[in-house]
Length: 135
Image: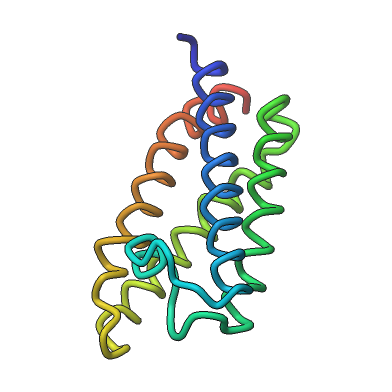
């Protein structure tokens, strides 16, 4: 598979993952249910149904849809893809610190922090060579 096809695939998979995971978390939050509990504990913070998690979930659902669209012409969306990688790594760094400073939130270090860093690592690995080659 050539680099541009791999990049499009990774962008679409990341977009779908964002939409599915955060749509499920949004639904769990607005219905105030933590079922399935493991999913909720790995990806949600605080008490179920908090407004902040609903707002963040809405942003990530839209973000995922935009990643899907960006996969059609990644070089035309280079700033968005760069932002996606950097913003999510910054988000993961803050969550890593919080996993140690918020009581009872260590599961996030092995849940959303590790998963987010891994996904952004894969995206960066396929994006950066394409980006460099186009410059």
